[in-house]
Length: 212
Image (tube, rainbow, N blue to C red; front, side, top):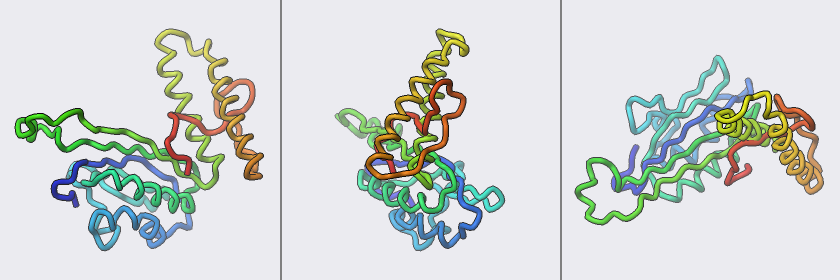
C-alpha cells in the first residue's frame, strides 16, 4: 500500500474506544478516507501496514476498540484525510482518544542516504489528533496527556506531593477554555478533572493542532 516515490512514510498510532453498537460496516465507512487513500477497495484490503511487524488497523470486537498501528506512503495531503477520518470517528467513539501521527521524510531512509547529494533538512513531523463524542471528552484526554507530560518532567526535580498546584493550574486553564466553549456554543458542562486539586479540569494534553 506504500505509494511509489511517496515523499513521506506516515505512521498512524492509537486506540479509539467505540460504542458497543458500532458495526464493522460503520467503521469501514468512517475510515473510508484512509483506505481509499491507500488505494484499496475496502478496509479489510487496506488494514495491513506497509511493515509486516506492525499489526495494522484492527477492530477488537470484544473490547469494542479500534486499534491502529499502521504505516502508509503519502504526502502532505494526508493531513486532510486525517481531518475527515477524525470527524467521522467522533460519531462512533464512546470516549476521548488521542491519535499519534508521524511523517517520516523518505529522503532520509538509510538506503538512500548516499544517493542524496544534498537532501537538505529532513521534513519529519509529529502531530496529535483527538477524537471523542463531545468536546468535553476530547478536552479530557488532552488534559490527561498534559498532566502526564508535566508530571514526567517535574518529577525529575520535585516530589509528586509538591506538584498539586501545577495540576490545579492546568485544570484552571482547561476550565477557562471550556467555559469559553460553553458561552459560544451552549454546550453542557464537562467532566471534572482526574487527580487534580482545586477546580476540576477538562481534557488536556500536548497542545493539539486540531480540536475535532
